[in-house]
Image (cartoon, helix red, strand yellow):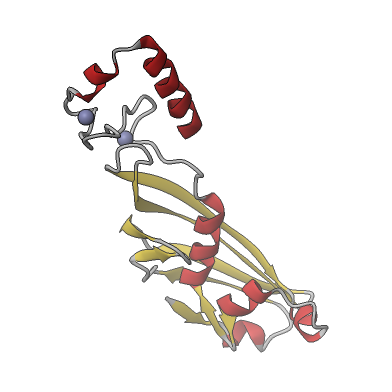
Amino acid sequence: MSVNISEILSRPSCQRDYVVEPEMDKLLLRRTSYRISHKEPFTLSVQKKDNKLYITGSTEVRLIMLCDRCLTEVEQTFPVTIDRVYDPKLQEDGERDVDELSFLDGCMLNADKLIHDELVLALPTKVLCKEDCKGLCSICGTNLNLSSCNCSEKIADPRMAAIKDIFRNWDE
Ligand SMILES: [Zn+2]
Ligand SMILES: [Zn+2]
């Protein structure tokens, strides 16, 4: 959702609160995307001071991600804290931050873009459904949290088990 902040931009100093409702239903990344299972309206506060815009707000978004080991869907909660400064001078000097340009288009402030930026920074490098997730059997694909399979019996040889451990550690 974008809000028109022309009123703020036209004054030397001004502060307004806007209730914004995130419209995004997915977090789109270059190579993947995550479904958003929960989002809520929140207050975005915009202040103009010394020719800069100060944009703050906080909300919560939940994403559906996949466990890295067993590929089960996991709902993860992300607190989102927006605290951005927009300096139009930097834009004129050519020192523009490419990202800054896209959350403000003319007098339209894009709340979804602000949330997007925070989520991208908050994404974990690893997602697990639980700390001790047993993952999928590498041979038959059985989810070892739900049932067991007989594949491991074929690797009864202790030397093979040791090698398996090494591979398991690589996964960590
Ligand atoms: Zn898992
Ligand atoms: Zn198996």
